[in-house]
Image 1 (tube, rainbow, N blue to C red):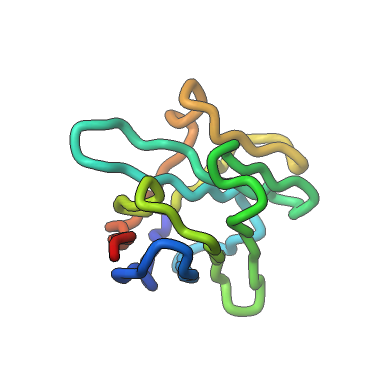
Image 2 (tube, rainbow, N blue to C red):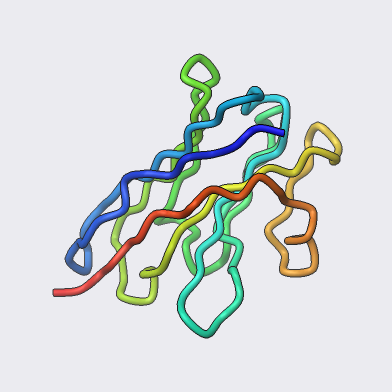
Length: 130
């Protein structure tokens, strides 16, 4: 089934930047739709961004639109989340996961579609604080 390893989480000041990596093994990242999610204690996982299998579609949560960018490096079999102008509310554990059964140009981060994702990594902690 494959798995992901997330990395890059750190403590950063508000307004700072951070890039997260999601390295895949056991399958190609361009063979599935990929999603980034985050979770804080006491809350469910929140969809942050996703990319379709084809790479033609990327989506972002309203709260991160214009500040976060998802990219995919097929040669490195890795997906990245580049985060800028970070806010305290961006803090949480960030996870990546795969949606293996969707149309080539489709991905979703809506809460009702979280069930579609599997192969969740162990997560990487992002803390935004001065």
